[in-house]
Image (cartoon, rainbow, N blue to C red; front, side, top):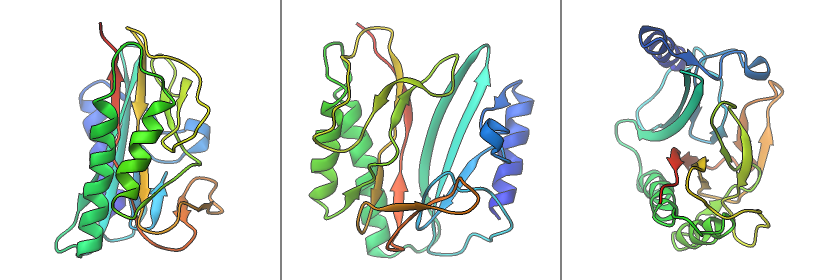
Length: 204
């Protein structure tokens, strides 16, 4: 179950003297986000059993020595169909190509263009509601890092900047809706979504 994933992550954090950043963050009740199939992000672990053919995103953030670190990956469970495999590979490529642009002088808004082109080439769409973010002593801070093209993000990368890139890529349209738990974001058309995230430090 996704609850079991939460237990493993929580215990691993405590064993390493880290605090699981999601726990009690604006009343989020668990230590990790688990987003399955049509869940875009912020899925709350529960008693749902993971099944053959699922795609499962596990989003881990820890706080240690005064700083947060945030990352996630989407995993293929058993025999995933061709569309699911394509989606997960596309999400990974979106992150990889965007990360190759990280260097002093890059405009934050330009990351969205390469992510959009990579997704569109595979007939996938990019979620616009959620974005990457600055991170450090605060879990979420400036800059905002949108993943879609023609965004108006401000800022230029400089040495010492620390931020996440975390494109959420959908098989269908880019629309999302949030459940009544005020956290779980799902695709409006019920089609699957995949995501990869990493925390980056700009160096000279």
